[in-house]
Length: 286
Image 1 (cartoon, rainbow, N blue to C red):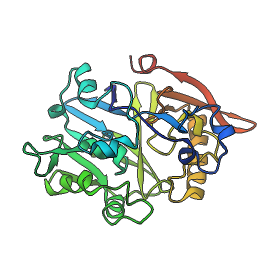
Image 2: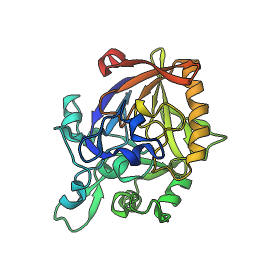
Image 3: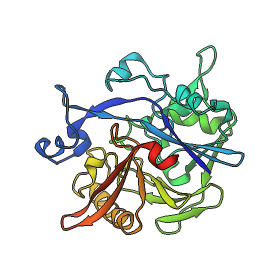
């Protein structure tokens, strides 16, 4: 097995929204904001090469939305999904599986693109199977008012209409080994219904793709929960359970949204689970 980071593009989000009820005087110590109160955010996806299988975990925002849409998110830097794949020697047509942790636009927007004459949409990975789970798919395609702006039908429905969509089996408890994939999944419901957190056995390490269970290293303290989470009290308990396991087992946490800390480990302290070490991609993957 080989792992490759796929940088799908950096953007910014409101720091207050990213940290919920936590005062700026606290969260700005780890995630400093600009004059518009915006903090740096990455869309760091992960490519898993295992034999003939190439699985891409999440796909970023994509590029099909309007200039007005992207204007809300202040894109910065030069990263994009195609260039990042090319740097590792791959093309999007090589991808055999696209695994979506959940269907918010910044995680799955790159899964769908305009068709050639821009009259409609089509899957951006023509040879791939797209993976979600049935309970999250139902949640996303019949969105509640709180999340409606995050579940964009043009990002979601073309995967099903193409016949390329499959669902992982319903979880038994909150963690399931998935024989149809190359990793186990921790299911979390605090951020959104049945978000999927992959656990990948890589050499002698467990690499965990954190998605929105832990967006940045600055979110390690339990009360530091995003304002976007639909069930913040459930996020508290899910984070506590997961972070205790991560400290006990020395998991390597691959941070999708932390623009400056790609991989971290954690440890137990008197104040709870806190940062242990930070790593570059090359230190872990090479």
